[in-house]
Image (tube, rainbow, N blue to C red; front, top):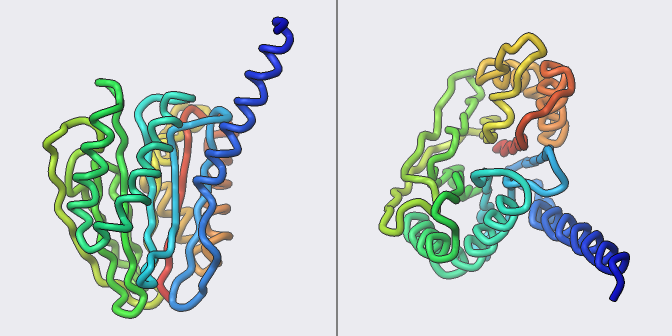
Length: 249
């Protein structure tokens, strides 16, 4: 095997890895009954540690995931892919208890992750009939629920990031939604985006962008939020940035 052959093989492996990560962040087939949802991830590099996921469960409930692995690049992407796979598998057996679900995923993450590697995660399950969102927030930025009357609720952490503490425990919380309410989840790269003068976009910038396009579809809303962030930063990105929205109808 020549040196040129090795280079070609590595290049192909890299492209396949990028393809695998993209497949992890494809939402399920749309079912527009009482819910609209969308997400997008703008990574700094071809591979990154941010993720989102929407998946229909066997009982018809919709699961929503947004996560951010520590670090950047290949190592962060590998950890997040493993966490996502563990979540999807464990959810088939422990969907009734999100606290148990995260305990199982955490045990696995601690077993194979490096000492300085962890992931923050927000995982919610929407019951479309009851319009309730059960969730666990594992050290992630608090998603915000923008109610139809303009009031806000913050879905604060209910436990530590995954992969840090083998004996960590989480508790499950629940919030009731009304038609028109919007759940907005995001990663650090969104709110920590900076202008050319060094000003941080922050939560205020995110909320203003969301409010300006709130009546749009979920797809349009996600796109406009990230475009607003990009305009604020002058097109300079320093971290992976992910936005996910879920709206009850």
